[in-house]
Image (cartoon, rainbow, N blue to C red; front, side):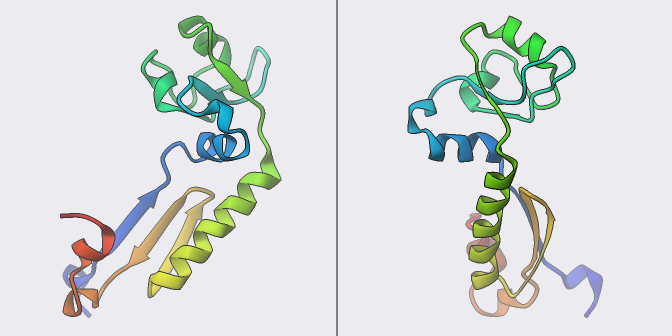
Amino acid sequence: MKPENRHILHLDLDSFYVSVACLLNPLLKNKPVAVGEEGNRSIVSSCSYEARRFGIHAAMPVAMAKRLCPQLILVAHERGVYSKYSFMVAQIIASEAPVYRQASIDEFYLDLTGLDRFFGCYQWSGQT
């Protein structure tokens, strides 16, 4: 098959770590939340959209994030928990996508080549 006929869907689970934190603690929903560790050299791994309104973003030093948003709720990493939820997402993808690769805990590439014959790659991916 020619490379120009391939259809690859990139899935990047935005705010994955914060979404997991909110699943575990629903009181965090709709609040400025960042996942990271306390400390002078710590950085934000992920943040909620409410935190982004203050200019906070991933890879920002936690100290700076706290200055930008004093009411920021900092949630510690739950490493094994994130893997569990990533595996759950991968299982859903595996049950629906013909071919996929997991690039990281929150990022996937799906090869949708050939689905256009059935109902269209854009429709399958939820795009219009």
